[in-house]
Amino acid sequence: MGYKIKYTYPDGEVEVEDDIYATEQDAEWAAEDGVNGFATGVEILEDRGESYIEGSLEYEIIEE
Image (cartoon, rainbow, N blue to C red):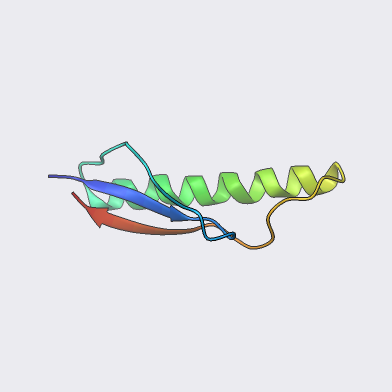
């Protein structure tokens, strides 16, 4: 038994990671890293004048 991360992108696309985390806290930390990485990537694209999906990445921790 473990925990997975389910991401929901601003355009409605849903992605469930293959990685399985031993604890819910480990999954939370990994998800927060993913959300921060997504936000940083959007900022970089905007700084370069490229458009990207408006909104933020949402996540949910699911038990396997």
